[in-house]
Image 1 (cartoon, one colour):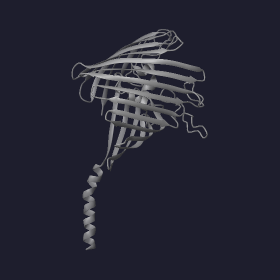
Image 2 (tube, helix red, strand yellow; image 1 turned 90 degrees about the horizontal axis):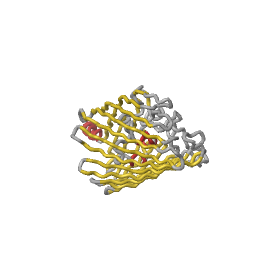
Image 3 (cartoon, helix red, strand yellow; image 1 turned 180 degrees about the vertical axis):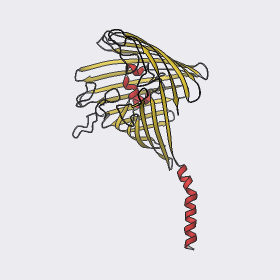
Image 4 (cartoon, helix red, strand yellow; image 1 turned 60 degrees about the vertical axis):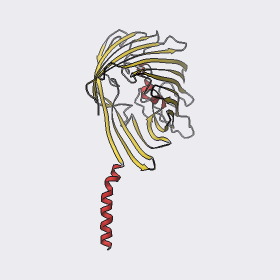
Length: 363
């Protein structure tokens, strides 16, 4: 009898195993995207350059792993490990981090999503729908590289959507642990005993989305500490951005825009600027999409304004593969040196023109 019961239990466990496994899943995904870009006036001598960009094409390249597990009662656990790739050389992005785009674990339910680890923050999330060019090589990330790199180390995040209303926030006790340089590595690890402000970052978002329009407002303040980039070498130094953006849908055509008010209190003093962007995305055919965007940054009390205009045409070869081309022009004020291509160079005060073409494939 005991033997029969044991065999029955073993059989039941074997039959239930596929059901248990079906409650968990791991997905491997990614995007490979690169091309060639030609820009003028890359230095004071007015020279031109042809190159394969590192940071992005139409979108940054990445390799990711995403897992979920159904916990029952409407709850699920998840993790995301996402690596940034510089496709021109095969190196790792985001300051050399193994999983620099995302490395987090969390719980999701009717209350929303709670996430722990390195994650995109609310400034990053707010631009998803309003910025039609996003991290395109020519676009808003050229004028403010932080926007496409708005991630926080050592962070706890919350995001909830209720009847179209989105509420979100992140809190980081050490916003950026990499010292490799660039917008994704600013040497501010934080977690300093006796100094809770050291490298702290707080972001928040409130938004509303419907089928025809959406609006978002965000708040983002990051503190510095000894050795941090951007002149934020004290925990009393900070860099604050307040954004307001939105979009409307006219059939399948999207019009999106926004404003970013920024104030930086660094060792060298306080600087203030307002950045405006307005763009249109129009599907000409099911396979062809045109995107056009204008960006202007007004820097207070100094002749360092910049205006950038860019356009992109994308032709989908399939659901996963597309070719694209962009053209752009940036005009710098006398003391400004904002390059048209994100991560590129330009002579101080010079106007720069550029053209690029590329190929992307997602999986």
